[in-house]
Image 1: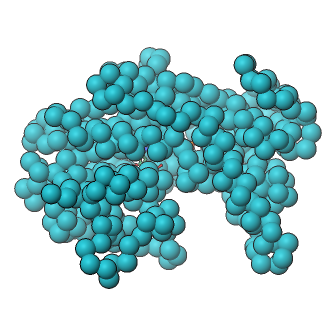
Image 2: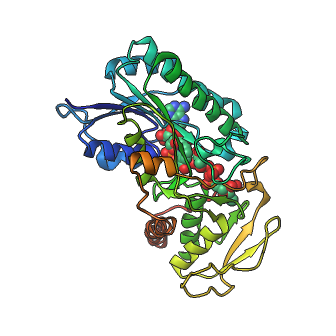
Image 3: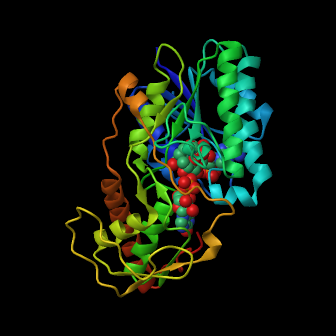
Amino acid sequence: MTKRALLTGITGQDGSYLTEFLLEQGYEVHGIKRRASLFNTQRIDHIYQDPHVEDPRLNLHYGDLTDTSNLTRILQEVQPDEVYNLGAQSHVSVSFEVPEYTADVDAIGTLRLLEAIRFLGLEQKTRFYQASTSELYGLVQETPQKETTPFYPRSPYAVAKLYSYWITVNYREAYGMYACNGILFNHESPRRGETFVTRKITRGLANIAQGLEECLYMGNIDAKRDWGHAKDYVRMQWMMLQQEHAQDFVIATGEQYSVREFIIWSAREMGISLEFSGEGVDEIGTVTALEGDDAPALQPGAVIVRIDPRYFRPAEVETLLGDPGKAKAELGWEPQITAREMCAEMVAEDLKAARRHAFLRENGLALPVALEG
Ligand code: NDP
Ligand code: GDR
């Protein structure tokens, strides 16, 4: 029997990789997309299937996590074996500006889905995955962070996700639902949204290298993260729903780097020189040599990275480092792509895009790049 999956957030980074993965596994995939004034399906256009063909294996439904009746109707129509709740206002910094909306989508949206599953009597059939986050650890209470580490959220986003984490646990315990949390640390890819830090760096530096921008404006470049590749992490999301009993898992690489290091890696990939300027972070004006790095040292010079306080957050998560021991031991999961390899892939893709844009601009065919992020 063909398994049927329903994804919220199918148009996002993880949604696109997970859809590819599930189609490869033979699933029929249904995704909820929001209505937008422009097309918003770029990340899944390459796997789009014309709804006029017989039995398409990828189906899109208009919907929104703020709309209970819409979610209930789609669940009733699709009768999914698995639900992956990836939809969210996922930007931590933006959540300080739209806290109420973030809570509605990221917290109550999860409740709406769980309650709709229960209301429709699907709680024994439908397995539920919740996209939980390392941001739950916020002001970290223990290093590295694992499944038992206490939470201390530091943003409206993280507080909303805390609700979703616990409501997922609660529905598992109260109604015997197969519902679980993947506590995922940061994961990136060439499909990462342009305003998250890694993509902002690779895209920004690629644009500078092609003469499309002059300066990369950054916030707290001393923040440290445990970065993995989205492709490795969506495989794990699926694995979590194939177990005998639902459990929560930390998904991370167990390695940590600073934003500053990611900037330097990216510059090295492009062979460009860097100079840091501005106030509020350590070691301005220097390029830190990376230990064990055999790439040629950078000369101070051409490209400016300027610290701009507008990108500091009202409350920051300074450092996150995950312990994926449980996922490795119980599920046999291993990340296959290192942060440095991922950075190289992102740089290569963003350089291609910047070259294309520069060519079009030289020939009077393109507008300036969108700068804000
Ligand atoms: P993205 O921001 O790339 O994608 C978010 C998706 O949610 C998009 O498809 C977006 O639609 C959709 N969405 C936003 N608001 C609504 C709404 N009101 N109703 C329905 N859908 C909505 O995020 P990622 O793919 O990176 O992350 C996937 C999930 O995992 C998110 O829940 C995120 O919070 C969580 N997470 C992500 C981590 C990461 O490092 N990437 C780490 C830990 C957790 P649209 O395209 O129209 O904007
Ligand atoms: P994060 O990711 O907040 O960890 O949330 P992001 O890439 O936005 O920030 C990581 C760190 O970089 C610092 N930083 C900057 N961040 C952005 N976006 N822009 C900047 O200019 C900048 N300069 C420095 C930040 O302060 C922060 O410390 C991501 C999201 O995908 C969440 O949905 C997810 O839950 C978590 O990862 C795990």
